[in-house]
Structure formats: structure tokens, C-alpha cells
Length: 155
Image 1 (cartoon, one colour):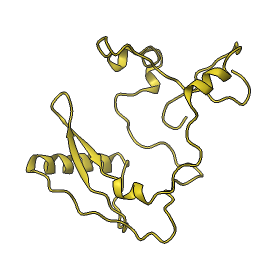
Image 2 (image 1 turned 135 degrees about the vertical axis):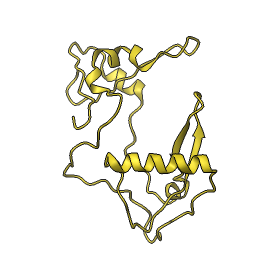
Image 3 (image 1 turned 90 degrees about the vertical axis):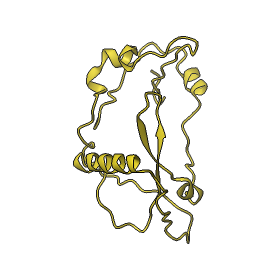
């Protein structure tokens, strides 16, 4: 890899063929320790705290919970408890709040989604988006040494 270049792992598949399972993707199969079936918790604390920069003068936005049916309410409580137990989330008294909704997956189960539309409207956009893959691949031309970086939690 050329000095100073960034590289990203991409897995390209033929959309006409049946989608492979996660375990059939070569890099997942070769490095199973990097792709656990279940995450036990968050990675260790880092020195840099995550923040979302909003436009100056924006008051906190809190949207009321969307109406959900009983089955969804039970699933919401279950998923929140699981996330709390794993420390993926914690109880908060923040003045910011976004509603949640459920989306039906192909297998019939439901997936919890958070609607951040209102927050996105007042968020300062990233000044440095990810580079185009074509640009990155052009930078790799002539390179003879490549490496795979660990993708595991806390790597």
C-alpha cells in the first residue's frame, strides 16, 4: 500500500445471484473473530468524545414518540432492556429526543429504527466525506504490499 493512502474493504456481489450469507463472504469466513454473531458491549472508552455539531442557536429538538401497536411496544421494551444490559445505551435526561419506529424485515421480524430527520436538518454536515472508491483504487496502482487491518471492536 502506498504511504499516506487510505484503503477500504469492499465486497462486490452479482445482484442476479442469490445473496450470500454473512458466513459465505470470504473476509468474514477468514477472520471470524472480527465479526462476532453478538456484540457483548461497547469498545473501550477513547480519549475523543463523540459529539454532533448543530447550527448555532438551535434549541434542543424533542419529538414525541410515534403511535405504536402493543406488539411493537413490547418489542421496544425488550430491545431497550437488551441495549441497557449491554451498555450500548444508558438512561438519559437529555432535552434532545428522536422518535422510534419499526420496519418489517424480510423474515417477518421487526427492526427498531430511530427517526433522526429533525436532528439531521440542524446538523452541520461533515466537511470531509469519505473519498470516492475509484479515487482510492487509482492510488493503489503499482502497490505491491497490502494488509488487512483488524475490524474488531476496540481495534
